[in-house]
Image 1 (tube, helix red, strand yellow):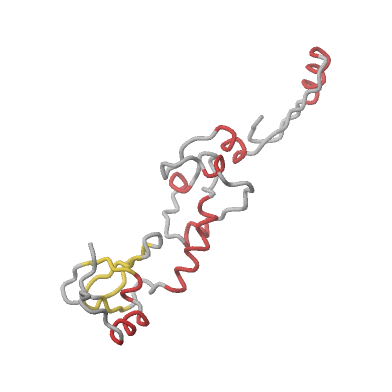
Image 2 (cartoon, helix red, strand yellow; image 1 turned 30 degrees about the vertical axis):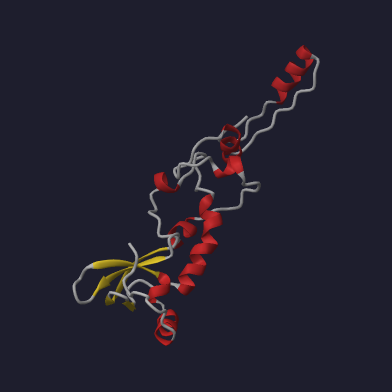
Length: 168
């Protein structure tokens, strides 16, 4: 059974065991375990992580949502169980690593379309949104195309017949 707080069913269990003449075991489970047992579809459109592959429920914090640039609206970051979504925990290391290798927001970068300022990053697609200095237009570039080391490599070893226009 699931309940928001501790419930004492000892007298009920004794009475049922006496009537049925069987051993009865009632266990209270948490909100995440209840969501696992019921199953369902998450906001991503896939089966709930807790009912498919997650075995242990590790603590999830609001800090993880902040690091992933998610809105701190409880309705948007809560799972089927009413607690913070489990996926925040297992996606968090990816976002921490991305912060180390992606140019930070506000930094000046050179893109194949010209220089500009980073206005956003998309970690899952490994892209950076840049507002171009010349036109004010926004462009989405792969992280590799705005990294200095990649640009130096491409300048030193150009591919024959390669274009500088990004795909898309």
